[in-house]
Image (cartoon, rainbow, N blue to C red; front, side):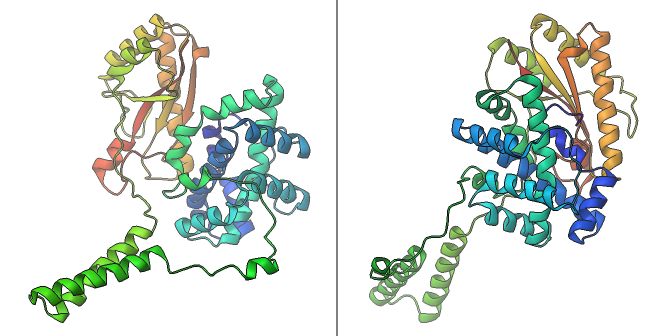
Length: 381
């Protein structure tokens, strides 16, 4: 495990070897599997994060880690029953009664059957929990320490999870046995008509009354209006999955004021306005120097600040190449800051490939926005 945060774990599942293992396990093409992993893994990670945001939830995660001895890297092994059993325990412990809903929504998003999605989660869970187990042991983290670590991961992971699932992941409850119907339950009154149905009836009555008293509308107009209102009611009752819209990040020019404020809203991302690489290379464009000088000056002024440099790409080309190039580009920025007098131990690097787009990749303008370097403040002291 080469990352020290949950976001970096996503990369581990996009290598050709791991993608092939998942592909064979669920009987899907490698291309479709790799695309699905970009949604499945962040969803699993955010589920773990949300589980660990309370003391009871964090304690539950500690128990899961200790119970099955999760520690160190565990490569997906879908032919090992014990491995999958550990993964199943972890996934069910994280999502509880929401598991079926999460799996179904991921299936709808990725086009992969629910059984395949669930198996992917069970295969991935031991590797993720192994990371947590190693971190807990290495840093001596208990439930409260784990809770603090997970809290830092939430904002960025939320951006990677498919629309409509983020809210579901905050409602995780323990698995409970199905309720057995008692004789007294059978005597209870049945549920009445649905709320949307009652609204429809009310609208019908109002429209008919207007038509009756004014005489200005014919029956066809009434029917058309009623169908329109009922359609709107049905659409309002349906959960809307947002589509990707351009995301505005604060400019790197705002970094100094943010550090001065000592804000606790971390992690906080900033975009470089003029820092870019010549296409597909590790060569910085000439305009990058001024912004790097600014950043180095601010970091010297606030010497206890820790940052992460993230490299991002568009979706053209293979994801493994995009991850490699974006990681190398982030490394170049780190070296540039070190050359300007900043301690390298304060700078973490992370290549994200095309995992976290700011805009659509279907246009050149959108792809240009997605090819970027971000500076993420992870600690201010």
